[in-house]
Image (cartoon, rainbow, N blue to C red; front, side):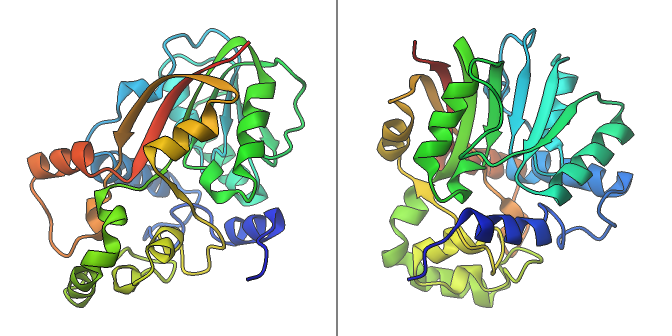
Length: 276
């Protein structure tokens, strides 16, 4: 198997910015960003963002690492962050994030960055926000070390990755049901993801979630995630969130969606404090 490089990852995301190919609106327009926010909150997060994703103190400099089209950058600013830097591996993501911040009246700095080799000095940031990013980079351990390096003493971070929930852990036994879902129309729009539930290999499901040409996607168990983080951080809390119900063949009631978000989530989040 050919080794996946950071350039492979950069090339894919440069051509396929987050949510592009799924929205009916032109990327960079107000309507595109409004739809993205609505889908993210109402669908992926079952109607409400968990407040634990955000730091309790936003008085210091905050890095939004892997900002994509700027969703988290804007949400951080709306919750009080005033000294923000949005960083991403790709030029296109940063361009979209700039447009979003401009349209929303948000002030932020922007920097093109490789999470495995950040250009920032040691001990710069009070907080790092990194949502659904490091599971796409080849050397995830190095990315975690870099996040810790650029944080100040007692600095905090919230990091999330794809979670090996009960569905993914059991996929070998229930892949037959995935094929039924596939035939019934269950899928994700755009990026060649129409056959995601027909996959027998659970690793392919994780990879294809972001597009058929996505070179890399990893999912972690609770133990694996803790072991990834603990060399550099005190893990203050682990929690779970994220169930993209739009992938199902029929709409589901809000209460069921909230139950699935709590009990069968596809992402695991960690609230962290840098070890001194």
